[in-house]
Image 1 (cartoon, helix red, strand yellow):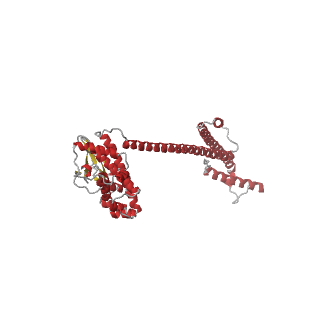
Image 2: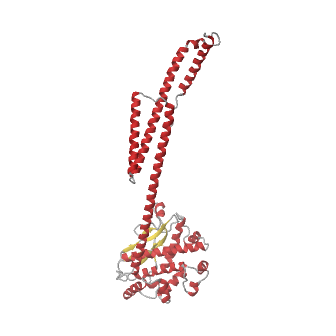
Image 3: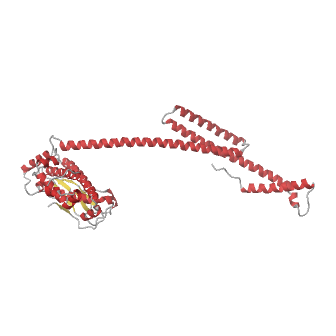
Length: 442
């Protein structure tokens, strides 16, 4: 607390009067008479008594002012002490500390008594006899109280930090537990041996969710492999979808998802992705049998045991469409799939085979619906965004786009099952708009 400094007027006036008074007294002592002439101002001699009286008044006023300043300093120091004691009392309550509560309560009562005494001193005009010393002691007391308050605040924040750390650890454990439960439920759903209502759109939506998840997992591995091989990911994304203004740099991954989905879902409307078979009524049961057969088997095991099956041919064909021989050579240093038709034991091929299995399962499930199989649809570039048929893959692009958002490209196609429509996933951008419309697979 800064003390109130005396007025300069009082100090300067006191100094002048003191010097004048001392000058007159010294002249009297030396000569016994009051000098005349130029040496001593006669007016000063005449007014010496008045000056002495004024000096005494100013001296008294200064002492009163200093005493009041000391009283105020002690008052503020006591208030700071009460605040510090109350903070100690709160801190001792949680966790509960009986001895600490008793000490803090005693400090509060003691400082309140001091405050009451200061009030009585002010009312009775009983001021401190040594105000200078009181000012210094009050300042020290206030600084100590503030230091104690800050110390207690620091301890409280430490406790809160430990509590937040515990909450974070607990939430992480719950998160891992939820992930484990989700994986377990997904595994049970995909590998269940019981009956499945293949005509329920909800089952198709569930399998579509798992399929899209596996596609994004493969895209992530592919982008990492491209960066490891020294490829320019941004340039590669621009070669897939040129002229798109991405809201974030990592949004380029949606261009690769668009490319992978376009290849993997190409000819989805045809039985077994080809014109070899027709979707007759009897074949619906066959598609469901294929679905039930593959959903509990790993893709690599199935391909190894049945290398000439439709699914094996599907995997090799889609791989060659997705991975150019030069890309495969840059990634692995060989062309094992394109030349020998064998998938090496790599994380890249493992991610691809899992994605291919999910797409194949979704395809079989779509053709097992009765009376009408699921169909696929995409949205053309420049189409107006509609929440009925579309869902934005990025919140930023939806929030920051114009009043009428336009589609830059379709990331994941949409599906129709009878009268039920499943939204497609699109990326919105400020790219050049083209005539609106939608396109289905031929």
